[in-house]
Image (tube, rainbow, N blue to C red; front, top):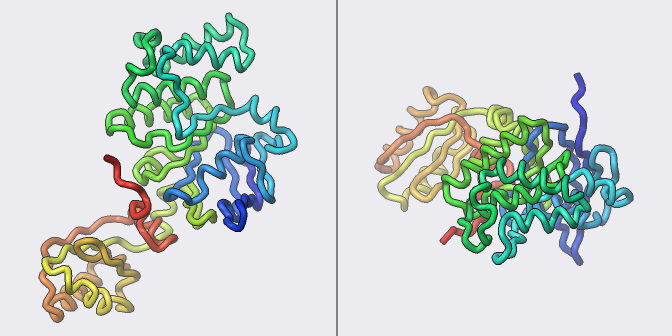
Amino acid sequence: MDRAIAIEVSRLCKTYDAHKAVDDLSFQVYAGEIFGLLGPNGAGKSTTLRTLITLLHPTSGTASVFGHDTVREADTVRMLIGYVPQERAIDRFLTGREHLQLLGALYHLTKEEAAKRIAELLKLVELESHADRPAKTYSGGMKRKLDIACGLLPNPKVLFLDEPTLGLDVQSRLRIWEYVRMLKARGMTIVMTTNYLDEADQLCDRLAIIDGGKIKTLGAPAELKIALGGDIVSLTLKETDRMAGLESALKNQPAIKAVRLTAKGLDIRVESPEKALPVILESANRLGCSIEFIQYNRPRLDDVFIAHTGRRIQDDIPKEE
């Protein structure tokens, strides 16, 4: 059975001067799924999102939401969507309820409609008991809950989340994940950007890995990991100065598909650990490399990202203070 298409993007480009922020993107988002745009800072994720929510006009190509063009029918598209930006648009002196009331007026909701929606949303994001406190007294997680409530106020068919858990502690991140899953269970279509691998892996039905404004690969996280092929043998070495020599020795060996240097050793993608381990141990012994630790695991989303972009996503993410 064909799935209904919520969003259609075709040959989308966005250029600033000589820089192509988004370069020939094409993808579809199905109704009722969580679709992720995964990539490092500057990959083009937010530019793509802002084009879909009508804030930016594409340089070329088209995008539509439930069949409505984001440029020609921008007003109609805006009636179908909700948006939670990366940068919090919260007035620290307004209460949670006042934020929602202000938005209700901007969306031209009647007082009765607004009061009903606000009560429902405060309950949904568990802010009922905090609704009449100024936002300056909220924790980071509470502010993000309020952001999500604001995005849901117009009762959208599609919700866009730009880095929904950026900078949050682990417990707050997990709570936001719960809300996102709950919205999907209610039939909402969700498009989110993230540079957290675990978030993309846990939440997204399908995702597109974006780097340098281009889609490198697209699919369900499990399918992308299976398609990579092979398992990962990770070595931790006592003498890191011999890592490069071991890397060279292992490349092009029959049982080994790829070798990558890490901070403390090597990640080796192998066809089968049983065939590869003797080759790895013999090469390490011949070169006088002392192996401190060996770990074996199935391919991770991190390995998928490396295979398609040539580097780790964390290399481009600023460390949180």
